[in-house]
Image (cartoon, rainbow, N blue to C red):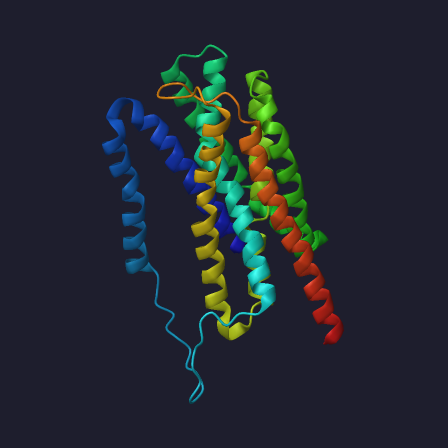
Length: 278
C-alpha cells in the first residue's frame, strides 16, 4: 500500500512536468500555472466526497499530547529523509534546465531544447515511479535500512559524475539520468515503512507528519543551493544563456545524500543497541 502511494505521487509529478512543458510554449506561464493548480483542487474535492473521516482515538484520562515528543531514532531518520528529498528536489527542480542546456550545447534551438528536456524528464520521473515497488521488494529481501542505504550510496555516487557527462552524446546522457532517477526514488516508500515501525504508536501521526513536513520543507531548499552554486561556477550565464558547468552543483547534492547515508548508519547502530537492551 505504501509503495502504491509513493508510486502515484511520483507518477503525478511526471504528469505535471509533462503538461508544463507541453503547455508553456503555446500558452505562457499564467495559463500553465492555472492549469497545474487544478490538480490540487480536484484532489481536495475527491477527498471531501469519497474519503471517510477515520475520527480520532480516545486518550486516557488526563493524558496530554506533547509535540514533538519523538525519540532520537525518529529524528535521525527524519534527517536522512531530508537528504533524500534534497536530492529529489534538486533533480526535479534543475533536471529540465540541465537537459535543456545540454541540448543547446549539442546544437538544438533553445525552444526545442526546453520542450524536449521537459518531456524527457517527465518520462524519466514516470518510469522512476515503478522503482517504489523495487524498493519494497528490496526492503523485504535485504532489510529496510540496508535498502535505504544502498539507494543513498548509489544515487549519491552518481551525482559526482553527472556534471562531467554534460557534453556526452545525448542518448548516453539520457540513459544515465534515467538510471539516476530510478535509483534515487527506490527508497521513497521504505522511509515511510521504517518510520511506522520505529515510532511510538501513539505518536505515529506526529512522526509521519514530521517526516513529510521537514522532508519537503528543507528538501526544497536544495533548488536554491544548486542555483547558488551554478551562479558561482557559471559567471557568464546571464539572461538567456544557460549554465554549462554542472559538476560542482550536482556534486554538492551528492555530499548531502551521503550525509543522509551516515544518518542511516547511525540509526542502524541505535536500533541494534536497542535490540540488545530489550
